[in-house]
Length: 349
Figure 1 (cartoon, rainbow, N blue to C red):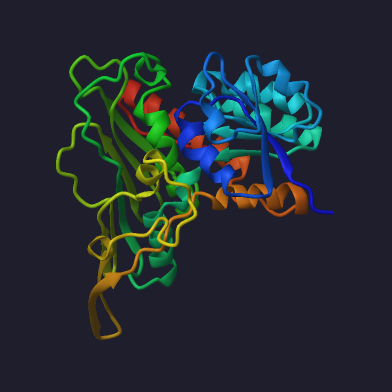
Figure 2 (cartoon, helix red, strand yellow):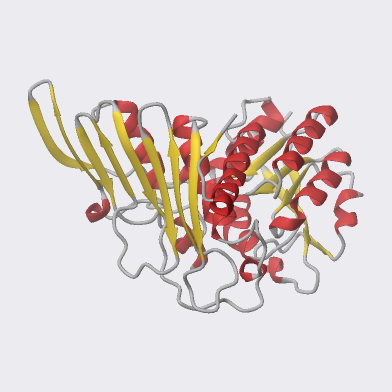
C-alpha cells in the first residue's frame, strides 16, 4: 500500500533551504513533518505544515518519523546519525558522512544491525557535466584512458564571517567540502586508486582553512587529477579527459545550485540544462576516421537522489549512493590529509 515517507530535517541552513528542501518539496512521496531550527523559523515558507522543533530529541522521539536528514555541520554528523539509527530511523547524512572513516564504518554496521537505511547526500553524481562524462567514457571513443582531470574552481577573495566552514580544523575546509564530491565522482567512475598524493594550501588572505587542493590519484594505467582553488578568476575546463584515441573537454559548472539559490524549484522543463555553448568538445581518431564535434550535456537532476531513497525504503531497491562507498571516499580524503602533512605519496591498502 502506498504511504508517504514522513521526514524530518535536522537543520535548515543553506543545505536545507537550497538542496534537500526543494527536492523534497516537489516529491509527493515525502512529507516533511518536522524541521529542527534552533532559533529561526525559515522553513515555514517551504513547509508551512511542518512543525518546527528546537531540540533534536523531539525528532528522535516522534514515532511517525521514518526518515531523518542529518544536514548539520560536519562535526555533528556522527553523533546525530548514531542517535537516529539507534532510534530506528532511516538516515540521509550530508557529505562527508563523518570526519573519521572509523566512525563511518561504525554507522554502516549500526544501520545493518538495526535494519534501517543509511545513505549519503552525494547530489553531484547528478550534475549535468558528470552525467555527460559518464556517457562519454561509457561510449569508449577516447580509447584507453591516459589522464582524467577535474576542476571545481571559484573566485572568492573574501572570508565569509560567522560560518563553521571558515573555522580552523584539520578536517574542514574545501577538501572535506567540495573534495568529498570530486573524490566521490572519481570513485564512481574508476573505483579505488592505488595511491594518493595531495597538496593543500590556504591561498586567500586571512584564511583559516584550506581553500586549495591538488590531488593526484594513481590507477594502473592512468592518473586522475582533482583541483580546486578559491582564487581562480578565469577558470579553464571543468573536465579534461585524454585517451589513446582522443580528448573530451567540458567547460562550465552545473547550473542547479545557482537555480536553487535563486529560489527556483526543480520542476521546470529546462531544469539542469546547459546552454549550447557549454556543450562538451570531443575530438578523436578511430578506425581511420577523424571526428571533431560537441556532446550535448545531459540535464542535471538532484531530485533523482530522493527518488532512489524512496524506492530503496518502500521497494527495497538498490541504493545508488551506498554508505560503504562513502567510507572508501573518506579513506581517500584521509590519505590526502596524510600526504599533505608528510609530503609523500600514500599507497592505499
